Image (cartoon, rainbow, N blue to C red):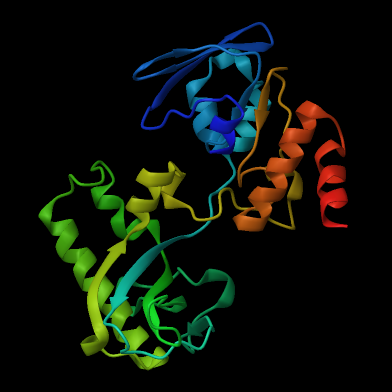
Length: 275
């Protein structure tokens, strides 16, 4: 709405198929529905995907090699549960559970039979029945390797074997929810789940990574990225740049915008509005 109120136009449902460059600038972006030209371009795709779509000479071989060597973060299964009205009290708290055998920094590293090793769950309040929960959303770290056998499929067109597997894993997660959260299946009106393939297909992240590229304190420069690129009219944003997560991507968006409109231009406006 903000973009449209400012005279802009938002187009969704188009797949970027190629990025054309001329010299040190982007000259056009091609999608499956047309071609777009502009003075400035901002990329929010995973940077590894951006490199696949640009000509070989657009970025240096060293840059391509460095980014290509950065691993991506863990993926997850997300479980969505709708609760029957007034069936479960809501206390405003989220919760986190781990198996005793779980290693904190490798929560997705376990045999499929031992999954899930950890879970973050967030109930939401029912606006029609204050004090009671309406839904539970649970995120369980999961290895992409579990779903690699179906990676050639796309959302809505997966083999029956995949859906049987997803159903089985979802119920394993719900067992933990019932045990740790004090819920029961009798409270649940509906349930569904998304897998690492769901994340991959909806967000375009390699291997369904939840937090973009993996950053390591032992080699911080490997994954270091600026909002500016060697293509003078192309800027980067999103969780591959700077910080990941909701707060990280919001801060990075400000950095990207200020690379275009000027340092501290937006930060000063925010500060003046707050204070």
